[in-house]
Image 1 (spheres, rainbow, N blue to C red):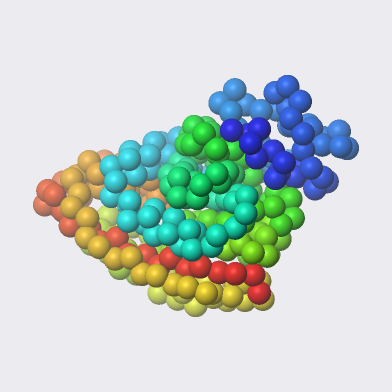
Image 2 (image 1 turned 60 degrees about the vertical axis):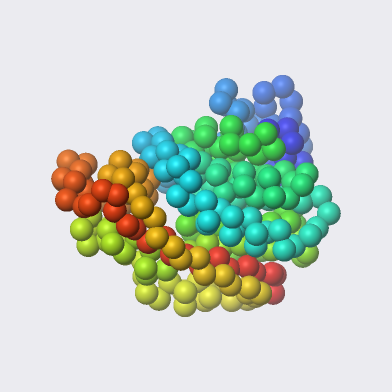
Length: 277
């Protein structure tokens, strides 16, 4: 619920704290933000050219994650968070999507509360009901995050871009940043057949460069396993990611139909844990 995390949030215009007043969040300088009937609040400082994932993409992601195929990834992220014991844990996930990963972390950290941040309004609607202790916020991670300085103990970036300077600003000195990134083996069985977006082979190098000066890596865990997926599950897997925008649905369905059923698809990621530099 937003009321549980409003003390961690900041006005996107002036950076001051926010207070709930009826169905509005109000800062001391008079900037106000209406809470949507779905339970989320938009803290975008103005109109954004980025709309994020569509309602169809969010629905496909929810369907796939509800099937449990990425549960080992969720557990790895939660385990990385659980290694850091802090008082009054507060978790921020950027690009939180459906909130599956954030909810898993909150269940692992007793008493923790969470902020799910995404630029997509369909994602925010889903986030608002992901967990009783999650507050859903629409925001753009490439601008100043609507979160107070040193407000959170854990930050999650799961298959999401990262604004390292802003993540460092909002993270407490005793906290950790947990980043999940795909390897070049992730879903490799589907890449050529379905024309999926390829993972950059230099992704690890670029990740390290983006963190330099802000964070130091303290742990790294690889998660790699086969998934046996039906054609319907593969459709959801493809439809939930950026590749959904690059291939006609009819052509995609025809190509998926050529696969055996079930088909073996590899899940392969790296979960890295960072502390502030």
